[in-house]
Image 1 (tube, rainbow, N blue to C red):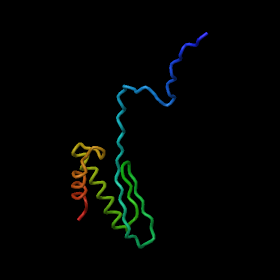
Image 2: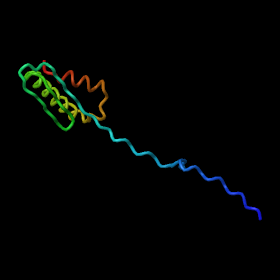
Image 3: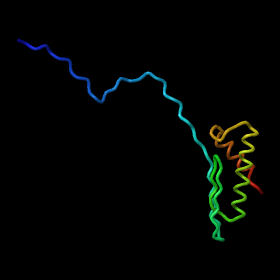
Image 4: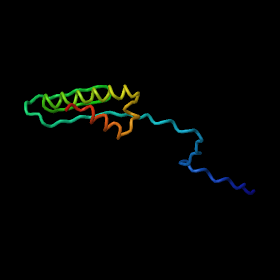
Amino acid sequence: MSKKPTKPARPLTAKPKSKAVPKATKVCAGLLGLALDNDDGHKRLTTGEQFVLVGGSEESHERMTETVVKTFEELKRRHKRLETVEPTELAEILQASTPK
């Protein structure tokens, strides 16, 4: 009696390629403000939905806070989101939003 030749087994690691369209990647964006000029011993931390401000003297922390608030107001006025605004445009908005 002769045995029939068997088909070689498919490797366990090989999976058939899926033709499904990959899901869109969710984009996450945020601003981080860091100031290191604190001499009074206070630990300052201000957070928002898309920003975190850490450290600094009372004056510099207030400037960072004002800058971030004005930046998000300007983005809203332009109907843009932090996730979609171009970096150069964001830099211009931040520059214009910084108190003099």
